[in-house]
Image 1 (tube, rainbow, N blue to C red):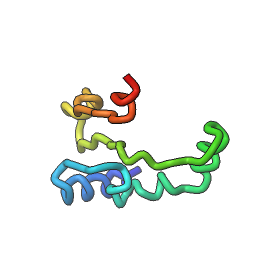
Image 2: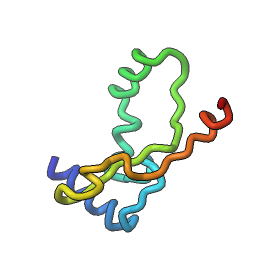
Image 3: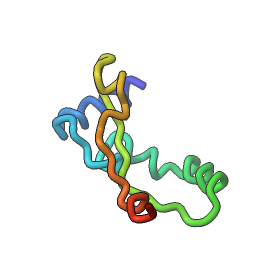
Image 4: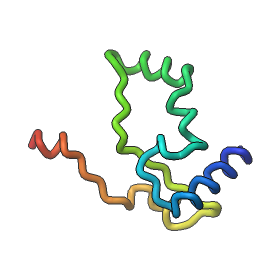
Length: 84
């Protein structure tokens, strides 16, 4: 956990706290590609898996506004809007 926290802190500093998506976090990218996690996802979701790219993680070294309100960032889903 300490290694993960240190990696997230370094990533957060390098990107000035603004990450385009989870694959941009060098310290987290491995989790998205971990074969055991992909096997679980394939079991739960039939069909091919696609990386959507609209993902994020809120990171703070101590509990603060991002931690307390993880959904504070605006989100727009063009596919959902097109289906309205």
